[in-house]
Image (tube, rainbow over all chains, first blue to last red):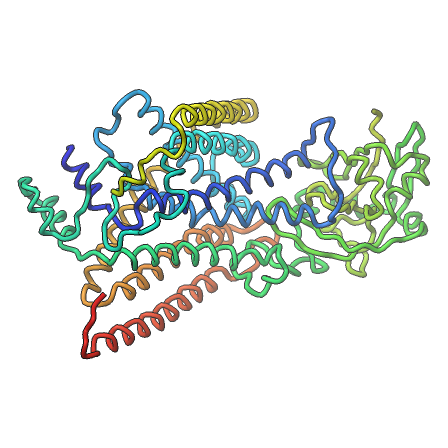
Length: 422
Length: 163
């Protein structure tokens, strides 16, 4: 067994499997994880703010940027995580498998780290496809696993710190053609078949032996070619997965967007849709002739029909719909400035509001809007989109559009706006 | 291994303190994750999550990694008369194509199942994936031919200086 484990490690030894490469790829992967964690927390608290929180409303495309970064960094994790696992793969065959309780904890934490990371990026990707083949809720698990992963990452850095620091910079004179063992523990300088049989170990018999000899006699690549090829492949992998999908949020890459789950300009009035009127169950109520928007502010209630809203001064703004799934679409909106409407209805734009939609079901039929968005001149009760009457799928008769907020909080099919008493 | 690598970068007591602090902080963040999980997800869902995490490890360690290892052996065998750069090019084409397939295949499946509205997954992902493989193959072939010609020219020089 021990010999098998040793041979596995020797066979898996490669010029790219060394602590320096683990540090190089690990740094990039760690950075991607931290970007995802930071932008993910921002998105989470925008949707579920703590009582004391207020958020910047400018730049107006802030959420497009943070959530676009979340998805781009998340997809970049696929090549980076696979590359990192490739570099450290021989570690799996350490012998004995567990040397001490401490070692057991370390290996268990690595297993959790790897498994949780793979699941996290996979369900994140599947969520952008709106496909949920897993037996647990996406949002809660994605959020909880983020802490599991960042915690495991900090532990991992703590455990590996001496190795990371020793390999933070490249060695001053890299050896030209030597095979590196992964860790400092194993002496693996297997370059040709001859070396292995010269170790004096009895030849393994049977199929395994044949397989091992076959593997042994396979020529190795020059170390420098191997390393450069590996790094080039990882770089191209990141460039490909990011470059061919990021156009769904980053307009200059739109022409290259061949794999993004959304395409700019595809949708009613040139804007993609996340939740349809059918899903929300608003088909009849939104089209009803007696629809009114009711504002309940400071003890007085006032209702506006769509015609009355259209009779108020109209404002044009260009704001993106930025979805939590990472796509975004710039659009031109026309409607009543929210702070003006609030004042017309006898309220103050410095209070927080509760927005209630006609939606029958769904977690966002009732949301809250902080006063910073209420008082922002860009925030509209939108009645028109890209020069036309708002499409039913985009929230007819009236929807909210505010700068720097996730799409799910840009409440469609508005029904009621209430002041939240502090 | 070069012995200068193992020389301590920090005094050992300070290093110990930093590592201990990191590990404690990590355990605390991990505990937050565990709490959030138990607090927000129904207990009967957790075995499914554990299964997915375990399956992800098995899928990587027992399927993806051995396949990658085998491909490395086979490409090196098949190309043993060729320059290393050409073998690496072929490997890169296979790896990049597989990576993109891994990411795009679920989109194709989800599209077949039927998205909730026509603005989700609106592109022809299967066709685009095929074109991506084609572009990779053409690009890889051009690079390989260039590398082959360069090596042959270098070998035909009278001095025959090998690196």
